Length: 427
Image (tube, one colour):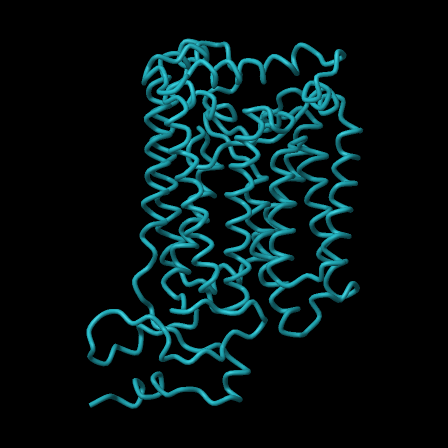
């Protein structure tokens, strides 16, 4: 016989209670395909790094494969943490995480100005903390904090019916995003990461239900800001000139993309095979990081790159499925941020390597060498995997209140006996 507590959880809430709190959702089997595609891409990246490790070690005196294996271990720890911690925890600490990202970014800029050894500055860009043999990129924390903050902020405005209110919602959100873009693009001179930040913010606004007129206005503001950031940076102008084939393009700006295209083209249909890369021997800049796609294409050829791109496409598709079936506005917006983060970062990296857009430095998710980027990407996947435990059977609406769905339509797993009350959570 069911206890009173179990009956309380099983009782369908009234219309009044539904308006106040979201319906209790039974924890069910998560989307394991997220893990399958994630592990496939991570292991492929590790194999490629191992195959070019000797070439990289001769140039940098560094064991990239061993370090990447350590980073993968840390990333898996972040994934398991995010997959098990209550989802409300991230929402509760969203403002603190954003503030931590802002403080660490400002501190990095200050350390760079005074020439501190704690700031790793290359080519006038200070993007990393350097502590011993480790480095940390605060822009990744900034992106993560912004995504969570916007999810909480916009969902509150959706419930209050103020999403398309300029004074209450759009201007405050625009100020925050604009300030963070200045920190990343202006101070850290990281255009690639800045583009991802703008893509995440714009995608979350669209998912929240931004009016088409405001979408056009937001797009125009982003485009104008992008032109301004290009004009004030000579190296970005050089990259634009290189992209359009102008005669004044500098050799330095042109060299990187030429070597990337040589690597991609030399891979042919089936690739040269593992350990046969030529571009990794000092010809291709950032072969283990931003340019890893060119090495992958050289190694596995056209067929291999198609398989990898299909894996990314299916991963994004599964993330979209989780988004579509998520219940609360906060979770939908977080999933929208994750989709835009991983999707835009992969698109920007690949498009830059094949010459479809001007060259910009940004890692390829899961494949590129790098601790901070991999850590936060795995953290995102852990959150997505956690959310997939609490999705509904049918797709939910995009409105602020998604609690009117009948609980009989939800996915049921496990035995037919009454489940324990603790298996129900507010997703």
